[in-house]
Length: 107
Image 1 (cartoon, rainbow, N blue to C red):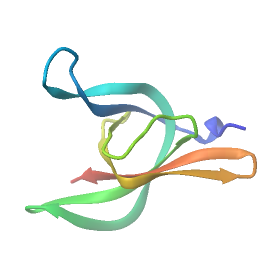
Image 2 (cartoon, rainbow, N blue to C red):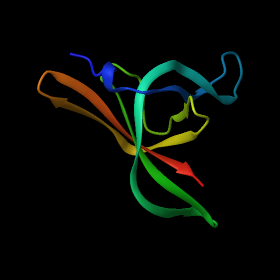
Image 3 (cartoon, rainbow, N blue to C red):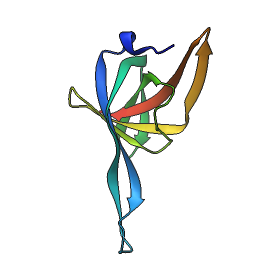
Image 4 (cartoon, rainbow, N blue to C red):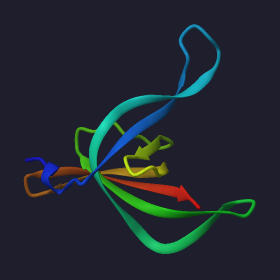
């Protein structure tokens, strides 16, 4: 069973990959227009580095989505998130399988 009726936003997933034929790396689109649901994880802000703060968010996706730690996620409302390490977890709730992705958005 899918959770698509609960998903009210869409995201584009970008991943750092090698550009074919060169020795350079770039953020390339892995998956476009994935339906999702985004919500804040908490109200707390954490220090990332050198006075930069971030806030954690949780993104719920269908279980077949290709998201990994370190990916950059761009939502349809214009925000950018970075998937934290060990932030992708597969859950099963009865017959519903879904991914819970923990991300940070810099402020």
